[in-house]
Length: 221
Image (tube, rainbow, N blue to C red; front, side, top):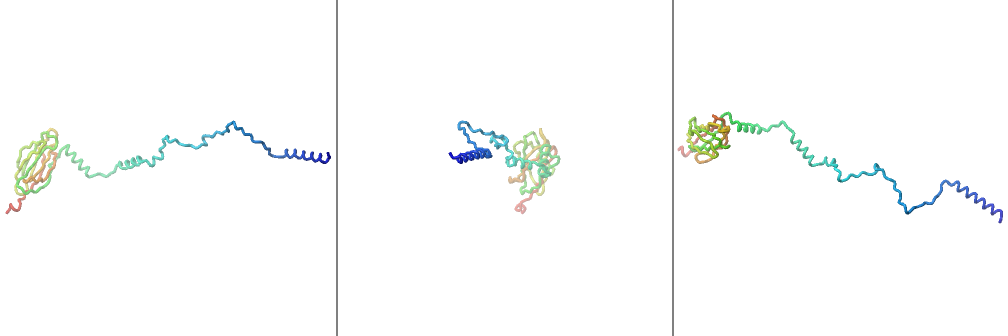
C-alpha cells in the first residue's frame, strides 16, 4: 500500500475524533415506552378554576332585584308616621265617645218644614232593648207621657199648629246599660219621610227638632 494513502487515512481519523469532542450538543435517541401511562403532573387546587354548585345558596345578587325586598321597602315607606291628622278621625273619636258615654247636652237635629197639620213620630231602641224610655213634648207640653223603646218601631201621631213647633224627645232613663239609645224617624201626615237618625242620650237630655207647619196655598183661600 502506498504510504501516502495510509497517512491520509490517519489524518482523517484524528480529525473526526476531535470534531466529536468539540461538538456542544449530543444527540440521543428518543425512547418511548408504549406500555406505561404518561406521567401527569398534579395541578394545584389554588390554580384551578372555581365553579360553584347550583345547589349552593348564594342569593346575594338576587337581593338587589328581589320583588319581596322592594315590597318591604315600599311598605316601610308607607308605615312611616307623619304629622298629618285626618279631621274625620277627631269626629269619629267624638262620636264613639258619645256612643259609649252618651251626649252630655241636648242634641238639636235641625229645622224641617211640613205641609200637613200632623206629624208622625216613630221610635225604637237601635241597640239591644234594655228598658230605655222616652217622653214626647211639643212646645213644653207633654203629648206622650212614656214610650218604652223596643226593637220594633212604635208610632205616635201629634198635632201641629201653623208656624214653628218645638219638638222634644226626652230621655227618661238609660236602661240597664247606658246611654239611652234610640232610632227616630219623622214623617209628615202623608207618610213622607222628613228625617231619621240615632241618638245616645244621658238621662234628662232631649233630642230637639223645630217643625214648621205651612198650610198649602189652596187651604189658605
